[in-house]
Length: 84
Image (tube, rainbow, N blue to C red; front, side):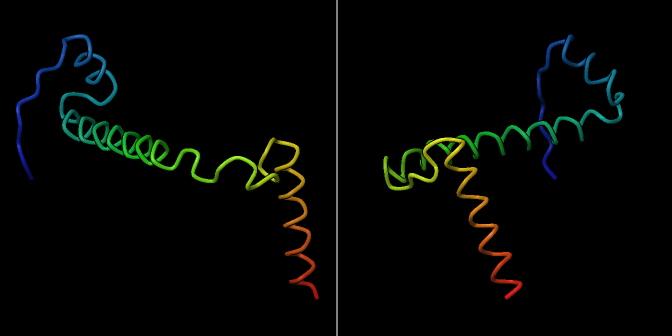
């Protein structure tokens, strides 16, 4: 476990203390940092994969109605396969 010194505004510290108390600060700050790191990783993945399917390759995902119809048809065919 590493230790570090972090400078936080009085306003933020008071808000944290109001939620978790002084004894819960470290856990709260670690969880907040983990959540932020996960969001940043997700944003990076989304940027890297954005547009990878290309336009027109999957017309079933063109809009909500097309997607809805595709999901229904897929579920219907899966339930028929399981029953038959």
